[in-house]
Length: 498
Image (cartoon, rainbow, N blue to C red; front, side):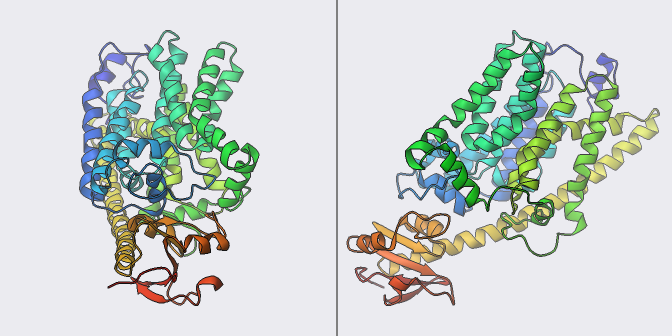
């Protein structure tokens, strides 16, 4: 799937790499990238659908800037970058569909821009293929229109590493310098620790080469700019940076040696969060692409080394490895979205390897056969991704619809804004009900029993419990009502109505 015209002009038809000049005179690959980005946006709108309700973590992020619901408790690991990203819509509208459309369009445009910075290092065909491979993963399609930070870390990683290579090749490329800064800032604003892991190979290159001190300053400046708010908030709300890092580690189950490779494998069947991650792995048809990914990336790296153009392939591969390490070996649970930055970066060497498979055979018949086999494999891959995506959307929609029904039932029983919820699923249900949420224990603990009792004197308060579950001691004597599949224990001050 390499671009034939590019191969003819470079004299290296089997590498998929363009000439050594860091920037071509004409951006020939932009129409193809535009088509990939447009298809990505359209696929989100059609397959994920704008009417999909907000998930648990989304309600936390959106509530921080919403003008319609109180802000939910913001735990230590979270960063406010995604809240700022959705603020242009969420600050004045409570329409989930409008927010989804906004994020789908924005994610498609961001993918186009992030891939475009690589056009001086890869041919247009390879870049378009890389974009299509990343955009067609079910996890990319699902999280593109979601108010979640992981996709945007992936975009920042693509842009930062690509601009880093451009700046290394041409120190006068001012756009590249700004791209390094902006990409690092975007990653750090979304997830500071993820950003650090992604840029470790870039920092190592800067330290090993005395000719790159400015790049080190720009890269560090971008990280500082993006993570600045998170660090300041650590001192204003969490008792300091060390305390926030410790609290963040506790929320994630304690960072340390945890072999989560199998957990990530189990999550590939459409489990958005695998905690605890029990049960069997999905069918080999579902997980085959995951095992093919490193093999094809290594193939792309080998081809690039032989062509003596290794850095544009090896560097994103190295950053992908460091980005994946904490989620494969340092936490005790899994979520497919955690590896989105690694998938985005690996898409480049994988596309380069696939292009080599198609162009390598010496005879035309061999190339046709290779192209056919690759096309069949990609078609099967797309089919699998679609099936998993449809399952994920269906199961996610069901749980979010249940939260909405619970919220409606609470309204019918007199729990209306201004109101406060605590207990089981209180965070997302509170968002759907327009209430605040507060917990006395767990990762979202933000209040005490005494404070909840005082709040019940001037606001509608309900404590939620699952079927068969018991409420906390202070609420056991309160009137009990069924709300959806849950039980609500209503504080005495709630005026019940039907």
